[in-house]
Figure: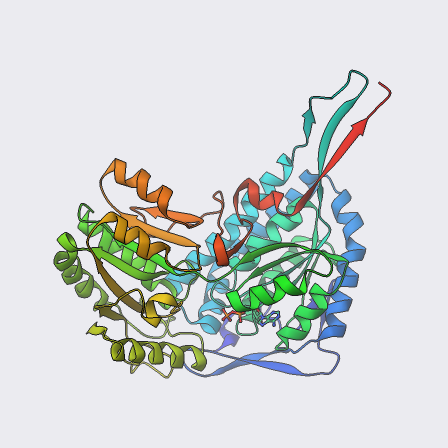
Length: 486
Ligand code: ADP
């Protein structure tokens, strides 16, 4: 199935600057492929520094008008955008499966999840309250107001081609900011389709600008080096996040960084077995293991180990691997050749370091970018596979004796994004939740993200939170007013 099967009003082969659909000044393009079939889906412009500057110019010019709107007026436009996304959800889901690979049931879910941020921030934007403080003397009054931070930049990854964009644009626009977005070069069509619907919704020219580029480093430099850009919101690898953090120092930008993870998924002896198996499947194998909150290490306690492994293996072997557009597929391909080669090499090295294959372990015959769902046992915390983010459908299992050992293993990583554990004990729930050095904890739950909750990490997994009221605050500055002579 080709991209022509998707409504042509949503398939855009141009970037968007100041209300105009534009090609690259150089005429260069990026080819976008379907990871399930290798088929060329289409081309988008390969823009560079000049187009990025033009986008920042446009966002700067649009800022005064957009930030001056009443929050209710911004909310109305955001709400219209949300409604259009819901109206076109099936096409957006198909487009996403075509360029990203995950099955339709997952892309449908992502479109709804992504849209939920727009709906939620349309409302929350009305609640950016200031504060009144106790004044130090009788003739003064002291207060603070909340104002939009200004022009913001967003750089987003391919694993959630829709939601990682709405999660940034929605709070930015609700706060009164304007934005320049650089989506991943692997999945630009989903981003451009959102842009087309934003335009249809009546969001004014220059408020959202979109740059497609394969020269991410150049665009990144242009965005971080420009003092008009007051905030950068980045979701992607820890390596690139650190680079952008450094590049932002010169202009002292505010940063939201949502970087890599190394999530532990801990199954204690007193866990509900079926719930733990279901949670592990969802947390580990969703999006073929390509999410930053995916379980990266499965820790299982001695007493439940045999029962858990038997049921987990049985369920993992039920995955239907194939083209995400086909009915019944439950796992799609990984994103590209570099990804599959990395996953295969990690699995090989884990075995050479002593891990044993319980199931899977090789590439899958469905196509070049498919990997068979895999379980590795006998994994220890010192192995590479336990230390690094796998980003693929591979579950390394570590066996442990007691709570202290599980917590020590879980925290033995520079990452701190999501962690999960299963237990029926109330006391353990509190103690373990407090001891885990992570920004988000799933307790008897494998899927935890939603628009009303603060998503984000600690340690080298990032800065700031997306979603919830905190996600709006991250796009605003507090201004203190001290009034004398009263
Ligand atoms: P992933 O491994 O998930 O692709 P990346 O961090 O490489 O993670 O990519 C996330 C986003 O960051 C993408 O939009 C990508 O184009 C962009 N990116 C990659 N390298 C840089 C860079 N040096 N500067 C700015 N953005 C970059």
